[in-house]
Length: 628
Picture: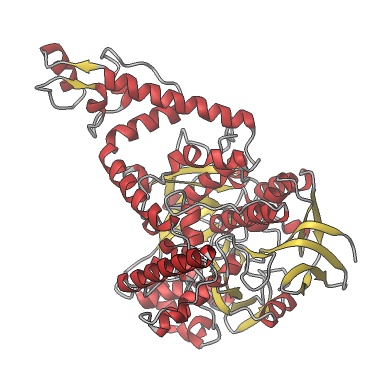
């Protein structure tokens, strides 16, 4: 035996780092294991943080006290606001980072955190007694005691890499797979499955003809991810765009059986929304070309990430495929593309806290739960780390509902519906996305992070001042009126908006799509607002007031269902009107509320009513028994 810890984390990727930092910052003695300490926080696939819906996750993570957003800001070399021309509900930030700087910066934070211990080692076993986790065992047979254990193994569980006909065990290229831990989970009775993902080739920059490619530069004045970021890195790198050709598609079509995806060698489930190049050519045969995006992996490296060229063809064929793309005719492959399949645990076996139902004190986070993406992993890690720390400290669990955050939408989707393909966050998954915007993440969640001890008093107080400025600004605009006189209407015409026929407030004027806050400078009642966040919130409140009110009404109705708890003692077999299929699903998922039960696939309104009636009978019976 080595020693005892409050929380042990197995795996030092994005989920593991956030879990470890959260637990340690909440006062727990925490131990983080990684197979290789040089790959802690490694960006193993693309060099980007954020993206559609993923930007919301990073902002929410930051608002709760996570680290990913701050490190992304610190190491970013390219910034983009996606969907900038659309409404705020679907706008998302994305940055490209220097991958090595990101890894080193996050590792430094982990190493310097008090109460957080970092150790290189391969965990091969879980020690369970009486249905409760007691600790872990490493490859040297050393035991580490832990009151809670969080497994964040990414693609390492029984990982198998495929390149053409070649295949070999690995967690990712160049690193060993975790085989015994996968077997340990299976022997504990967990339902497990197999998933597949992949990564494209890395090309040598000096062998690419960038002159024939479309260039995309970074946004000139981006918003940082983190509320703690004071200044962004000044160095910027562009991205470049090309496209596959008829020759690319011919090479793949004529050699499709050399792909392990089509030869039957890969058993894992692929993601429909992120297909490999082979999949694109086969499934979208009518498309003449597919985009290829070239992104620098860092400031001091020749490696270029060739997004869109992900495949698992033999190396010689990969070279021909790359050379068939305009601008890449002479490109050298530094790292070959590959596919990887790995084990995951069906997440319906987890509680909302990400604790397993089978083993008390055992938590799972990240790709082991069937998700894909750095951001989905990091937010799960934070969630699991918070709840593990709270459990160790004997405090109530941390919970949010679907109207609070994208994070809770993801957690609820995983534990209620399970996964049949790698889960990725989309804005369409959130019913209340107009109130779950990237721009208001701090307002929604920083109070929660402060209550957990993950947000400083100073940061929380600064946010309260900003909220006061937002309210004052809205009140001022609602009180200021303009009148339909010639001077006013002339000014409105110069602003490119229609004249008024009746008196209107500046708040009403700001509702117009073509009117921005600073456009109203000529009118009495306007005041300068230097804080971009405050100004942005005022504009959104005005322009989307009606839509926001409707969503808030829908949230009220949803919260009634979420407030109706379902006791763990309920016997679904005793509800005669439920189908056998629903009885099995309800018993397996163990929904905590009627709201969660409503979201179980196959649930009907009549079945929900039957459960409510049964709960009422249970309540009456309990009251009757207490009376006696």
